[in-house]
Length: 262
Image 1 (tube, rainbow, N blue to C red):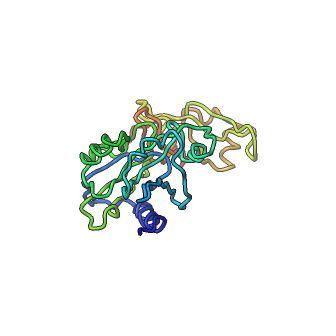
Image 2: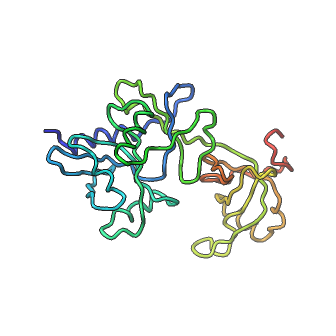
Image 3: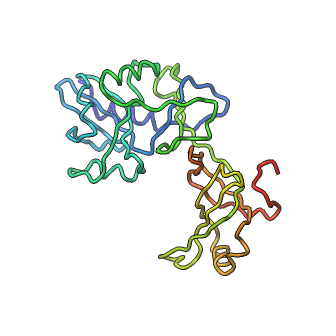
């Protein structure tokens, strides 16, 4: 008899996923949610098992999991449990005996189904959601509700080991247009973040990460910094123009435009 915890550990370890390797070719690319990866199976006695990355066992008696009951004995899948509009930190609220959040589950891997078309058909048959697909043409922009990409080489001899997580770090020059003061804690009263955007509106963000010295000077003399061009780094751009995890790098005293070509 298959040891479910041992099998789940092997499978879940495989989708910690390597970092993206520039220049490698991948057959499929899917969008990654900001949620929890979960292994779900039905054993040969008919019992359902759900295990998280740390092998914490979950039951199958909540609304988000009802369609998973269509799994046949011996079948298992990998998927992601997420809170629509939320973050991975909120997923634990879905798994409580009395959930305070509503979750959804997307399947991103079914053994022996090695094409995305097959995955979609399998999920349709089980009334489950499959992952979102994307084009390799632009790996810098993501829809709201996602956090990055997973690039899949399904010809890898040990599927699903040939997967790569892609969260590129990029930089942009943006113009400061507003400020926000901290309201509590160590930086109470100081400007702790600023709102900035490119001159063409393609990118916008609330950004932090300045030094204490800079925050104090910005608080004392905000007029010095309003409309200044600053450089930030970030992980991917949402289709709305917002950017993920922006952090301050430096003030661009040498620039008076956000045009990347100058």
